[in-house]
Length: 293
Image 1 (cartoon, rainbow, N blue to C red):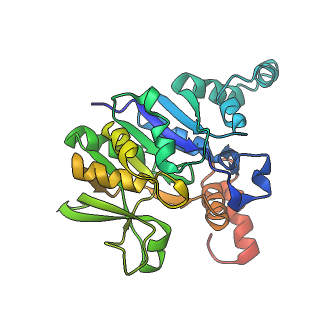
Image 2: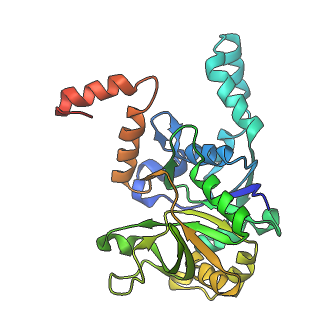
């Protein structure tokens, strides 16, 4: 089955970016000239997925507004003849439908995914974590498109993984796997942020998933974990045992925009590639620090 729906959980409080996120959702913090969430939506569009289900919390209406019509702005741009700025805004609305669902209680990532069930129904679907930005070379399939292709080939839930050093396993969900072929594994279980001693591998989850709709039943059956939250990793373990799940590496450059350092690195790296300011920014870095940026 072709994947036509993607879920973006966006209900977090963004406490790592306070005080900026007191009034601005972390998903709307700009990386160069785009809000962080737009990089995920562009990745979804590149996979020919036409519908995004946004799982939002309170005070996230600016995300919904971003994907809505802005009559005043568009009128000003139209009258000024600035179609180079106007056309991308209008084109985005034509290519993606955004449906917003309120997560009324902060009960974990698993609960956020479960909130999408009324819209997703029985269809397979993608999940993208907004803190993670995946950039591919122009002309190549986006990260989520690569996973979509694997799902369509194997008709089995599939998640992206990446190898991390032992010192980083405590930051991620880590999968226990059996190798199937090069860069493809059968998932046995998922452990959420294990110690180095507990980690079953060094394959971490960087926030890209394709799930069979059976994940909803699994999330309803698992017991809440720490702080009463429904852990997506527990639901994935049950899904892997019940229907099977694959793990695969994707060809993409990843930026962790969920913390200050990763956010700044993403800004620097993507600014260097920006067609308008990239060369000038590169020269600035050379003058400022020396060497080759």
